[in-house]
Image 1 (tube, rainbow, N blue to C red):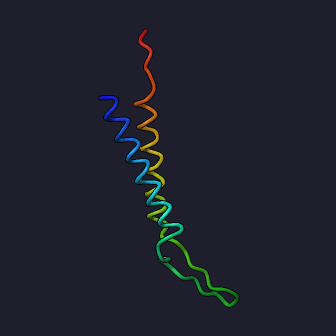
Image 2: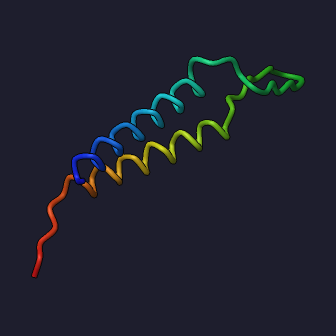
Image 3: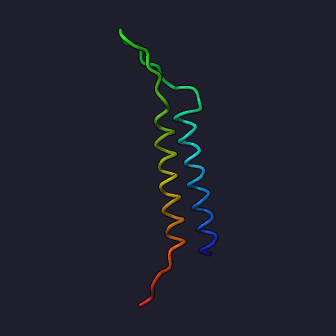
Length: 72
């Protein structure tokens, strides 16, 4: 059971990292801010935050599954 949780945590963290990376660097920008001095393109922050949450949650699950519990 612990091995299954470890694998699931690693997979969740991987998917979250890929989503975050793609939202920040690869996919086209979702918003454009035009001012008098510059034009800025903004990434899709909902996907960035969602991917980061998946990454952190998957990492925590994998760490929880990998550590040994001491019974007292």
